[in-house]
Image (cartoon, rainbow, N blue to C red; front, side, top):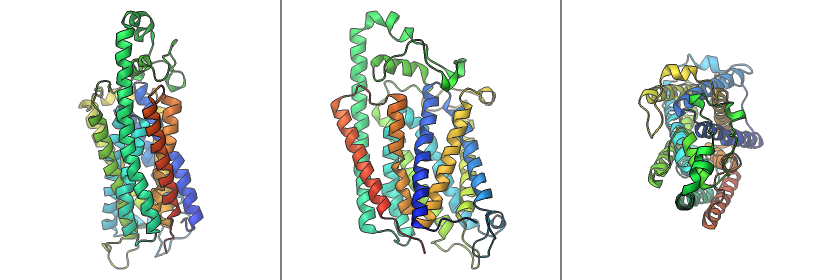
Length: 406
């Protein structure tokens, strides 16, 4: 099979993974803001997320001859390696819960803050665990300096959300007081929001109304609330940040669990049984991620949470508006996770957590596609700049701590 063995190859995997993992959340956010039910989107997403793992396993996992020490993917499926398989499945479970939580957090706190806070928690907890699991192959004095920067980024991310919430409240209050007489003719009633689930026109490629509010204005916030599938105006900061912190804790667990699955640090395998390869572990990891996502989202179709609309399995099957984008999001996430694990096996999973720089990509999409932070206060801009600066420094420091697994 193909294995990444050099430090340069591992860093290349991490950088490509960073691009993919920073892009797929933007697609899910865009669909939710255009009115597609989050349950429909996530069901589509999880199908191609599993498909990506199967493709990686049957290609990279099958290249070259199979040896007793390094068996190919299909050979390992029949081996007695269930303790490691269970670790991989546990990792898939917490990743699925984390990804599902972030889909709702995107609506409540925005793409940028969700990714920064959850990714920072992932690094603070997950990287520390991986450092010790990897037998300290990373440079501790460098690694934990990066972890400290991530911790500061968490605090700044929470402050950004609170400040931006206050800005939005001020905009809506001013809009209500100053424009009451104009709302009927020039305000929200003149907009024509696209709703995927009520015959919305043209999907993502078109979706523009004859008149659109400008990013960052009160009219834009009201139009967005009318269009999106999860209603968030008037909800407190606590709900969004609670979901985000829960997602971050889930994310912090999946990489250490995968590390245990591939390296057997706790010696749970029988003598003579080879460790799971990255590709076999990723297959089991993704299978259980798929099962959890399907069970929860099929339940949420009929018993929705957090103000999401109620639906049905029949409605899901008939909902083709935006399905292509949801399927693409699953592929991007699946290949991104696979590349992260390939790089982590070579350079250490603690260093591979550098892909948690994905909020830098997500923030770019948040500002360009969704107008996040447009027309916000100087305080919000200052906090946002500080958050991204600390985050950039943290990722660079973490990458510099890369080691080499013997």
